[in-house]
Image 1 (spheres, helix red, strand yellow):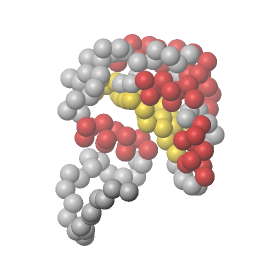
Image 2 (image 1 turned 30 degrees about the horizontal axis):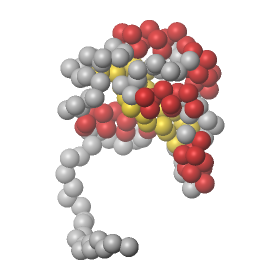
Image 3 (image 1 turned 180 degrees about the vertical axis):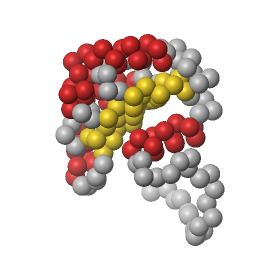
Image 4 (image 1 turned 45 degrees about the vertical axis):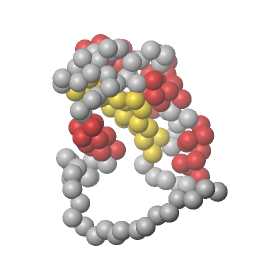
Amino acid sequence: MAAALDFVGSRGLPNVWLVGWSFGTDLALMHGCAPSVQGAVLISPPLRWSAPEQLRAWQTSGKSVICLVPEFDDYLAPAQARERFGADLPSAEVVTFENARHLMVGQTDAVLNAIVEAVAPEVSTPLPRTWDGAWEKRQVTIVES
């Protein structure tokens, strides 16, 4: 996590958000509450390794935490997520994904739209599924080096 944040910092990128899925959500909560980070989007968070003090650090920081929780998640259902986050990170927004399971199969567009709504609320959603703007065609040749 530190290396990724150092890389982003070295590029001077603005509006840094962390997006994690499953185990990656615990990594974000455990190691990502850095000054340069605006917030985190957690997809199917199991909350297995994050300690209460790590959740409280996010709460104290005032950073946004959005949790996309599948209705039928095998590890942490929406009601459990609200309870677990509510104890130490009550500002976390828990969004239920109806009829979804941990892998979020069939939810790609909805998840992507939810991420965009969190990190770039000025962008209208749902995101377009087609492109009618300019494009170019290139021939690419891959050779062994």
